[in-house]
Length: 144
Image 1 (spheres, rainbow, N blue to C red):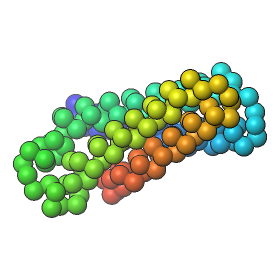
Image 2: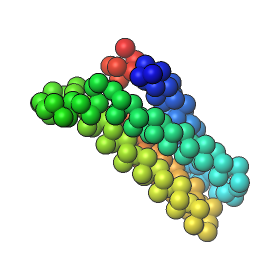
Image 3: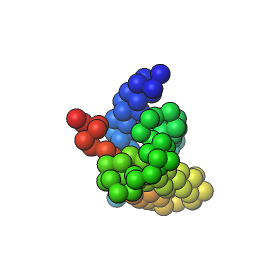
């Protein structure tokens, strides 16, 4: 079961990252061209929103099932090892913050009245979230 969840978390990461990149580009173009924020734009942003939240939930399940997640913090010594610190603390914490920012961007956009403000709220917060996510991906484990 652990291996299946690990593969799901890794595979879903590709979808979530691609969706975030697409949303950022679409919203940036919408903001710069002055087009009207449509239902299609909202749904595009919602897809990335949902994928990133599912990715976070799968990651949290993996964190508590994994022999290298929470147990690294409980055993001690994780803070002195950069790889263990990334796995046990930095990756999950930074991704929780990133998903919270994505949530704020999407939620604010629903309340704003002008199209430009909606586009800007989404692309700025999604972009900050994406940068945070990319900064704490364990690239050696993921690509290696």
